[in-house]
Length: 199
Image (cartoon, rainbow, N blue to C red; front, side, top):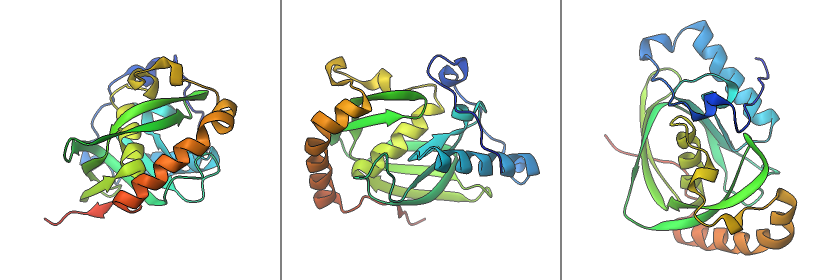
């Protein structure tokens, strides 16, 4: 496994719609190594997720994992999940305001409106189809990462630019209130962890 450089805002690869992955290619040594590098780079940077374009690979692959993350201590745990060619469908019309940050947009946070419940369909790293529902802050994490493979950054979705702040300012002025909002989401949806769909 190799730690990769993480693309920063302004890099053209972050604004490119990523190419679908041919399932027949997933078994290749190169593709499996790329996925390993994606996971290793995400973990090294304490990311809650990372998309292939963020390591300069314009392919429709994302990794998501949350476990005692120091950057997002209020986020419920998410087991390591690899999504290849993912699609997201809202479930219902309820939304919530999510304070987001991004490894490709250093030292900046802002409020983004996300769907409160989603249905995700994708292939796993071995080409097997997977489908699940996620809710609350966990749903927001998946939406953020899938945005990356469409060339969208969270700053594009910030409706009120007055919510933009540094990480230090977030911790000092906004984190306590946001933690309360997260707690209310958890009370409503549980931890929102991916729940496999039947069929």
